[in-house]
Length: 265
Image (cartoon, rainbow, N blue to C red; front, side, top):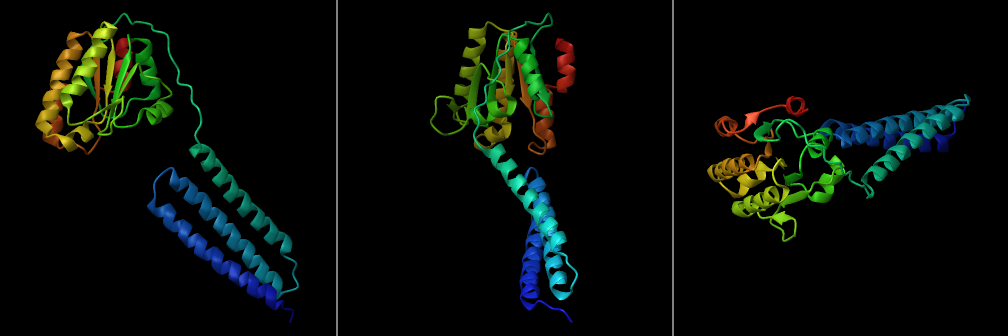
């Protein structure tokens, strides 16, 4: 009986390694979310092809059947999938200079005013539309400006970062009056018909009680409307309890982005 002992040993070791990698990849695939889930899926496929190639080595070493070509194909596919996935994610994570778009102002005939609550984050398309049809866009967010601009590919006219770090663009979440003053100055500078997009209410509630945050938002709403401008508040799911959400929705009209854009158009 034909047998290549060294080949069988090497192939068996590779099979065990491949199975271990496959199990680890399967664990990642089941337990992490996108975008890592997609990488875990490709890792699992690559590890499975590696196991198949290693089994070919074992069979080739136990018989006179020449399966080296089959093994080579499996190994090559495994390598290509793994390397291409790594290169793709490294490219996605590498810092790239993004030039945010500036849109020419095109004031709508419809009034840019009101206070609305979105249950979903505003889309880049929606923000671009509001930027074109207003005198300016101010964004209040927990996300740092560089990351926010990279996501939306839009340079807001003013950006307020909710953070306790000392920075020119940062605002301490405990100093609600400072945040309000900064927004009011922007509205007056723009002469009305501006848009304030506010996200990060959950961060404010961490440092203030809900009553204080609600009063702050209600007061801000009055100032924004009195300046013939628009306030859009993003209410993320499962952050507020039903009573708190109901209180806010009495002052902020719940609306979908598509509906608001249609009204303004």
